Length: 127
Image 1 (cartoon, rainbow, N blue to C red):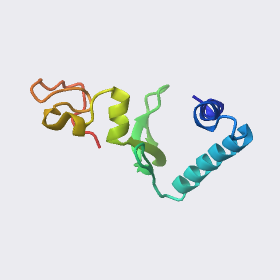
Image 2: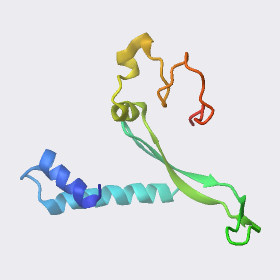
Image 3: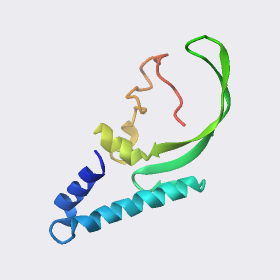
């Protein structure tokens, strides 16, 4: 989905004929610009019910030149990460929320229940 798709969806589902396409596009551009500027300033952006965007610093690490195999230092850099809310994850996986499931909630993010043996290929801790 790109910006034009989002604008089209907003016009079809909520804006209808009452808002001009140009206005919806300007609102989307403003939102993206504000999120970008906030992240560049080092602050996080929290959208309730959706998730959090934040900037993290990657440390320097050693890598290898794929052509020669020689070790080389990969410098640290900043990256933007997104952490979805539980509500967002629950909606995406089409499973009941913890509140709806009550005490019967027995699965982690990968659909494993505590009674199943751990699969070594899947991470066991989610940040």
